Amino acid sequence: MEKRLNKVLVLLAFFFGLVGGASPVAGPAYAQLVPNPSFETYSACPTSSSGSGQLAYATGWTSPTLSSSDYYNTCGNAAMGVPLNAVGYQTPHGPGHGYAGLYVYCQDPIECANMGPDYREYLESALTSPLVAGHTYQVTFYVSLAENSGQSSDGMGAYFSHGAVGSTSRTVLNYSPQIHNPNGMLMTDTSNWIPVSGSFVAAGGEDHITIGNFKNNASTLYGHTVRYDPGIHDEATTWSYYYVDDIVISDVTGTLKVCKVAGNGVTVGTMFNFDISPFGSAASTLSVPAGPPPGGSCAVGPGFPFGTVVGVAEEKPGGSASTGWVTAISASPAARLLGSNLNQNSWQTTQGSATVNIGPGVTEVTFTNTNPNVRPGPVSPPATNVNGGYLEVCKVGLGYLGRIHAMSSFTVSGVSGTISVAAGSCSAPLNVTPGNVVITELPPMSNFWWTVAPGCCATFPADRQVSHDDANRTSTVLVTAGDISTETIAYITNMSPVPGPRPGSQPVAVAKKP
Image 1 (cartoon, one colour):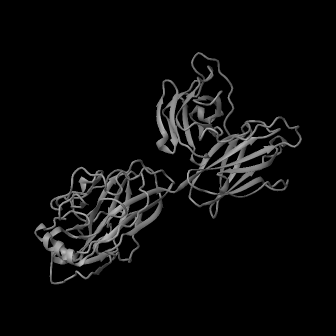
Image 2 (cartoon, helix red, strand yellow; image 1 turned 90 degrees about the vertical axis):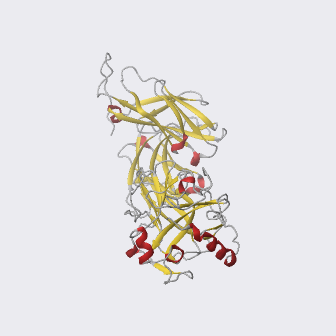
């Protein structure tokens, strides 16, 4: 807010005599979803808190209302410095030089009336990428009550929005924050940084974060501090003012992937269904076509929060010995496999199950079926991580193509031969050298008419899509070093503009996708 700077020297003298130095508190690693999470990057040193404030000096941060949220840095003047400034004394949370500050509550009838009812200040920043629908995010930021505050408060939260929020007033923003300090828990610590944290499931597309008190005065609990004096009506004694630092947003959703290997006597392309059952929740079904050994073919399943225990059970196909028995179950990383059961009993509805603990990145479960009535052929040696990284190519079909098991062929730089992937499925993990890898889709059969869809290419994680060239049917992706849990999954989307063959070709019969 518009703080009266003629009081700055008095306030600094007060704190210089009362407050000793504080040791920095080590903070967590900064999350990449917030571009300037600890207010370290700035365009200018802060010198004032009057007018609209200088929060915008911290790169990427703005005030979404007409209120004057503040920025503090060791390069600032006496009023806006670190650790000593006009409203208190605090070192940054963890190593650093800056933090932000904002008013979250005022209860004095005279001073509050000067700025309007329910006066609030907020911090707002765009995210580096939108949140993913259905993913769980852990959010933590740190606050410390400024020593000059006459009140402490329980009002502090973080709201994630589609686009920036804004207001032409200085009053409370009427939104429901996904993350908030518990109601009734006063934040009274002036010496240390305390976390405000929680988790939530994203609706998808949220691309901004706003921090502040989203409750009106009537709903905000407050408490008097040693600075409170009912006979003085100014901001030094009647407001709740907090420093804010280190905003951390972490996607704590891991991806489950199920792979099917067609062992001896099992036909490649045979479709298998798997029941996916997170503990305490309803099951869903994932269909995976059997692929050749050693890796088979795979399908990417749903995401689950880290630590979720998930059961994966192969449904028993009806009446065909050619599907064989489940003879092996494995997981990668291996430590995430909590247990497995081959279930080779004719009266059971499933014929193999595994229980896995979802972790960061990809958790892969592989089922291998063999037919005991067929003489074994040569066995391929198991894959080893000789190149340092893993890539998986997934095929997505739109329009008419999405209703058939159309097969696409790809070449991958550094991998010999071609890779065949049916629409709606994925290749086995490909062991490749870390770095940029080029995936090229070979031209389709002449009697089918389909094209690379606009925005054809995407990856998981999303930031590994480097570029794509629709005309030349290529996608360049980044592969990082690591095991299968850190693999890059590349999605290639094709579409058929009309439900029919390519003009000038002969009609062909197609198999409908079940």
